[in-house]
Image 1 (cartoon, helix red, strand yellow):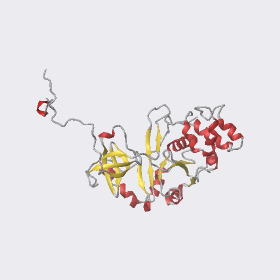
Image 2 (spheres, one colour):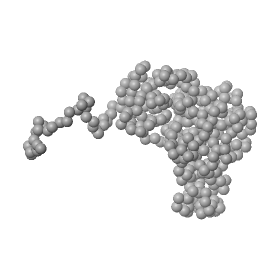
Image 3 (tube, helix red, strand yellow):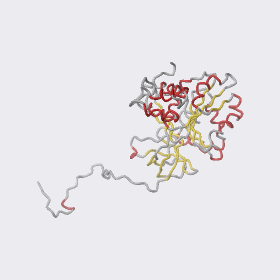
Image 4 (cartoon, helix red, strand yellow):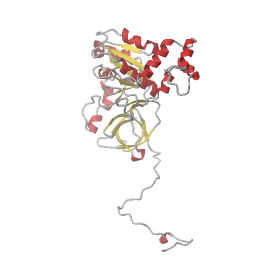
Length: 336
């Protein structure tokens, strides 16, 4: 066997031939210092439509990101062809840290969580007062997901001409959740959009609700046609037809004062990923009372310190009831 001495040079080193003719792999990854910032507007079968300045860019995820996926609302860094011209493709090389996430699982037994929206400031929960009947358990689950993910919730109650909102609002009065009540005519004549717009401000708002409640009708009224053109050619590039809320889609409000994100209609909202200990942060008037709770307290057990805290007058008993009702949604099926 040939052995190398102390003074070998490159001619003495044997190199293994590369049969594939390509360059050897390296763990060194480019820094992409010239990457441009953008926002993900929608995702369709591996293609991500992004807004870069005033241009629509279609991109794919870089291999070095591994299994980390970008979702609607993500702030990303892109390289490649950023012209926005037809049949061009850029590459997403970085995903910025998220300020909030709306997550759900398919059901309560599903261990795989799905991030629906990233970086939204608030969650608009749209539900009809009749036709279809309201589903308080689904609303509760959306509230828990909002509190857990760092989003501020508010309610949009539609079809008030078919049923009064008083009974449903009574369930959520102690949670101090903002709400808007509209009738069917207002969904189409712009009245609903005007009142909901007052809650949107300079924010990113995700809209959720099950089919038939008027969610997409409301979103279409909020986003004027000229603003919708910004993303109008997206589906032509990706090969799909008109957007029918089969995937989340971010749309800019007029006067560039915020964004709305229309999400697909939901039939269920699994909470298998939720850590109940984080829900208490949505109740600052109760959070201080948890200091006397036993370790790993579920806040719904005999030794919970919140009972004594509320009994001493530090908080309202109705607020504790609301907290425990929301925590129980993780253990209770929507139809129960």
